[in-house]
Amino acid sequence: MQQQHNKHQRGFTLIELLVVLVILAIITGVVVQNFRGQDYDAAVKVVQADFRTIETALERYRLENRRYPTRDEGLEALVPKFIQRLPTDPWGNPYDYDITGNTYVIISYGTDGQAGGEGEAREIRSTDR
Image 1 (cartoon, helix red, strand yellow):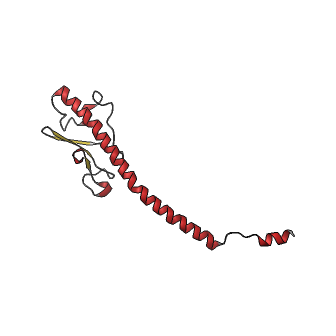
Image 2 (cartoon, rainbow, N blue to C red; image 1 turned 90 degrees about the horizontal axis):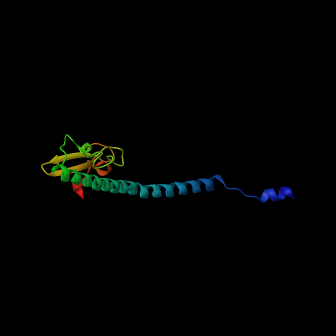
Image 3 (cartoon, one colour; image 1 turned 90 degrees about the vertical axis):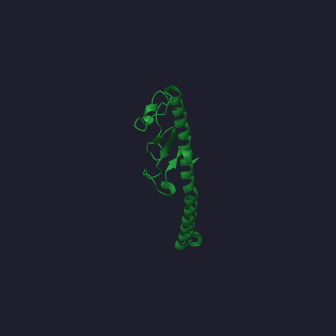
């Protein structure tokens, strides 16, 4: 009787296991593609929030000093009086700062940390908003 019971037990065949693995791989690929763009979009929102924080500190600096920091002084002129610490962009790079006359721009160089670039490696400027 024991032998007869074992004879009728059925396991998964190799083909069934392979089909399941292929289906899981396809589903995983679709999910990863959908979330990939969202990571970058979230990082851009962090950059924009950092821009607002730095801009507030720049305005406080201007009110007290009647000018913005020079390019040579850079954003470091804001620390620690106007901002506790300078944030870095979501990719771990410092923000750049440039000023011409009374117009400034804060720059994140994107995922590659280099000027220029395209797609996710493009620079993001405070004047882009």
